[in-house]
Structures are given as structure tokens and as C-alpha cells.
Amino acid sequence: MAQHQFQTEVSRLLHLIIHSLYSNREVFLRELVSNASDALDKLKYLTVADEAYKSFSFEPRIDISFNEKDKIIVIRDNGIGMNERDLVESLGTIARSGTKAFLEKLTADAKKDSNLIGQFGVGFYSAFMVADRIEVVSRKAGETGAWKWSSEGKENYDIEPASRDSQGSTVTLYLSAEGAEFAGRWRIDELVKRYSNHVAFPIYLTYEEKEYDSLGKEKSSQTKTDQINAGSALWRRPKSEIKEEDYLEFYKHFGYDPEDPLFYVHTKAEGTQEYITLFYIPKRAPFDLYQSNSKPRVKLYVKRVFITEDDKDLMPSYLRFVRGIIDSEDLPLNVSREILQQNRILSAIKNASVKKLLLEFKNLADNNKEKWEIFISQFNKPLKEGMYQDIGNQELLQDLVRFKSSAVEGWTSFAEYVSRMQSKQKYIYFITGGDEKTLKASPLLEAYTAEGIEVLIMDDEADEIIMPTIQKYKEWHLKGVNKTGADAEISGKQNKDLEKESKPVIEKLKKALGDRVKEVKLSRRLRDSPSCIVADENDLSMQMLQLMKSMGQDLGDAKPILEVNGEHHLVRALKTTEDEQRIGDIAGILLDQALLIEGVKLRDPGEFVKRLNRLIGQGLDA
Ligand code: ADP
Image 1 (cartoon, protein in one colour):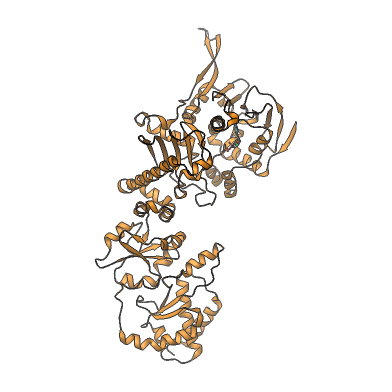
Image 2: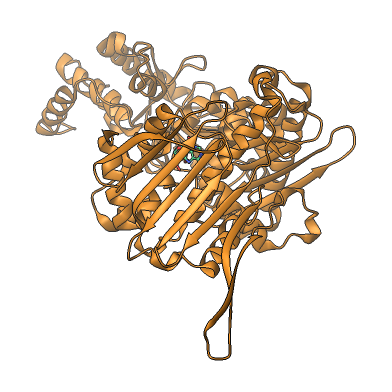
């Protein structure tokens, strides 16, 4: 017998699960049944897809038995099984990315952690909440030897050779005092019906049926085995026969999400292509939505046989929050990953599914305000990604995404913006490059606000990248107000005298600022502020460059265009002075404050402060 040490994270996880999930111990059965069902799926797939397993015949099933007196529960499957190495890798280490992410999020605050644990699948180890000791005897399909893994859920586990008639795994739980209640017929029956009713394979329960005489003495005892789950793939049943709670329960089994979904979409397509899809939209964005290894969550079945789930070709990445299944009648059972990627049938199903989902989202927006608010608060960002990833559905997506606005509170859509547009207005204006507060305070908005032109406030970092790629909404071009040329529609104060008068001031500024700026101009868009920066229409904005730099891409420094307000006293003060230091101070402050207010980091904050103090010391009008 070989003793092994659990990977340190496993020990931590075990400890945590055992101590934080008390009130929800019963989920252990769902987790073990899910594992058994996955093991059956995997073997079933091999028998259709792999030549070596073609002649392998088996009736997939899960068997549960128990012994009330000895407090034992046994869960047995005839699935793929595990050999010695699999046992070490699967049950001795943490291979699952979800679990790793979970451990990284732990706060060491027991209450917060136990909330957190509910958001992740806890898996096999949850059985230690009810058992003092667990044994897994497993034989891998295609191999002859079997192995026994056993552990008390502390620091280590043992592995030794064992025997098993055929392939599959048998998990035996030696229940603790806390778990003893689960070794009973009705308790198991209830839990399987609640959590695992729609597992696609039959789950059998073996029990003793006893008869008693009138004095309460046992007359006879008979061993019986009944199937206790519905066993049909829920999605294959006619919609009219499925109750709301069936959908919700199936989601719990399937979606590894303890919360109910926000809504679901069940579609049966007939005609040139036959397939069924059942998609769920969670109430909350999955924790790993923005991690680069965020997993797709749609599973592919062919005629009820599970094929794959980690295929990015089942859903576009911007819909990676959608969970559910696609079950096709037309795909060949032995599709390989490579074939899937260019399979016409699958891509037709995918396209139709995406369209269907987007239309459902639209339907929600139009008809269910309450759910829509939740939806958009969680999934606006990925939909925006879609706007530039999925050109084919751009129009639909443009109708779905929401923005903040200088004119209204809360979310607004492009369509609503357009409905409020001034009659002569040709463009949709937006501002990017900071948080909502910074953007709303930007001097760049002054003229628009003064002239009653609405500006969309894009305070999402991704907006910086996405918006410049979106040229138009319907016939209206989009314009970032931090770019040159965006002031064309502003009537402004075309004041020839001011222009003439300001010429020498502009010259002084150009000279003082040198190559810190690309250009200095008299602004048409400022009202109260003395200055602002804009980027050339074809340049990246300063904020964008800052963002790229923070992501490790240094594209060098951009030179902004400085626009100044000729009527502001700080600018006027330049007219009357020839003192180079004073001109330098005013110019530096005009530029630096414009950068600061747009959320751009100053290269030399010390210099800015020095100049400011000098000016204050002198008194502006001195
Ligand atoms: P998850 O099922 O989420 O991957 P678990 O902790 O429940 O996480 O299980 C870890 C791994 O152990 C599984 O991914 C699987 O490879 C293996 N495993 C668990 N139970 C079984 C089983 N009954 N048959 C075959 N493999 C199993």
C-alpha cells in the first residue's frame, strides 16, 4: 500500500468544505452522481468515436446502495473508471481551474468564504462533509487491473491494488455522525429526485423491503432495486410536459450554479436540420467571465450522447456566460474536435442559436423590465465585445448594449439617444477615457451641454478599444468628443476678433510647450474651463495609450492637441506678459490640468505643483 500526501491546496479545500458547508451537506450526493454521469458520458463517447472501443458494449447505469446499520452509502457506476495515475491526478491534486480560482479568492473570513463556496462546484471532496472515510475502487475501461483509493480526508490518502469485475468506479462512504441520516431509502430517493432527476442515465437504488406482523416484528425482508430518477434527458421532452421547476432543477444539476437562472430558452428545430437547444442565462456573471481562460459553458450532444463541452466553436466567446446544451440529430456521432471546427451543420446550429439568443435578449429588453435590468447589469460588457466581434449580428447587438449619458440617469440605448437627438444633429457623440465622474466633469463636454447636445458616457475600459471600431449606428456616425473634428456641429463662438487677438497667445503657448504638444488651438468647445486636450482624429487617445501600456504594450507617448479658451482669464493673462518663466508656468498649468481632468497621469507632478505655487504666489493679475 502506498501512502500519498494530498497537494497542499487539497488539504486546505477539504478543511474549508467540511467547515463551511454544514447547512448544505446533502449536495454531496449530487456531486458524486454528477461524477458518475460524467464517467458514463466519457465511456459512451469512446464507444462511438474511438475504434479501439467500438466493440465495447455496456449499459450505462448508476447504482446506489446503503447500509443503515453500518452507516454506509455506495455509489457505483460502470463508466470510464480511473487507473492509478488518474486516481492520483483526479483525487489527490487540484486540477480544476475553477477550484484554483476559488482558492485564490478566499478571504480567510469564514462567513464570506462559505458564501463564496456556494458559487463554485465543490465536487468529490464534498463527500467528506458526511463521511469519515471514503474508498474508491476503480477500474479503467480497457485495462484489467483495479485500484483502491482511500482517505480519511486529512493530510493523506492511500492507493493499493484491488479488484473489480468490470470497468467503472465504486465510491463507498463510511458516514460520520453528521452524515448518518443519509443512509436511508427515502432520504436518498428524495435527494436523487431533487438534484439528479434528469441525469441522462438510470439511477437505481437497492434497498430492503421489510414486512412486519401485527406486533411490529419483522416478518419478511426482500432486496429490491428500483430506478429512482426520470432518466430522460429533459431537453428531449416536449415543452408542454416540462414544468418550470423541472427546468430549474435541471439547471442546478447541470449548471453548477446554486442560484436559479435568470431565464432559459428551449428550442426544437426541425426541417433541414434537426436539433434541440436548451440555454440558460445565469442571474450573475460567472466569476471567471473576464479571465482569459474562461471556459465555454455549452455542451454538445449528438443524439443524447455527450460529445464535448470545451469547444469554443459551440458559442462565440462574447456569449461565454450562456450555459446549456446543444443536441444534434444530424452530426455524426464520431465527430472529432478538428472536424467540429469546420463542420457546416454545427456552424449553422451555432449561428441560429446566437440569433435566437440575441432575439430573446431583445424580447426581454422590450417586455420584461425587471429581468432586463438584472441582465444588462451583468452582461452589458460581453455584449459590447460582441458588437465588434460579431459583425453579422452587429445591428442586433447595437440595439442591446446600453450606455450612460450626459442627458439622462441610468442606462440608455442608441435608439433612445437618437430619439432625443436635435433635428439638425448628424452624429452620435461619446466620450471615453475614465470613470463616470471624471468623464461627466470633463471640459470637453461643456459646449455640448451648453448647446443641449447629448453625449454618451463610456466609462468602461473596454469602450476605449471597442468604440473606435464601431463606425455607425444605423445612418448616424459615431464621434468621440476627445478627437479633433468632433466640434464641427458646435456653433461655438465664432469670434474673428478673439481669434486675431489670441494669435500671439497661441504662439507663446506653442513656444513654451514645444514638443509636449502636437498643436495648440483656440477652442470652440470650451465654456468655463481654460483648456482641454484632444487627440488627432487618426491618433490614439492619451487614455488609450495609457491603457495599452498598463497591459504591457508600450506604443510610446502620444502628443495631445491643446485647446484653450481665449476668454478665460488664465489665457488672457498671457497677453500681457513677456516674462518667460511666467509664460512657462501658465502654459504648463494649462496643459497639465487638462491632462489631469481627463484622468491622464502627469509625467512630472512635482513640476506642476511648483508652477502652481509660483503663480498663486504672484497673484494672477499681478
Ligand atoms: P469535477 O467533477 O468538477 O471535475 P471532482 O472533484 O468531483 O471535480 O472530481 C475530480 C475528477 O475525478 C473528475 O474530473 C474525474 O476526472 C475524476 N472522477 C471523479 N469521480 C469519478 C468517477 N466516478 N469515475 C471516473 N472519474 C471520476
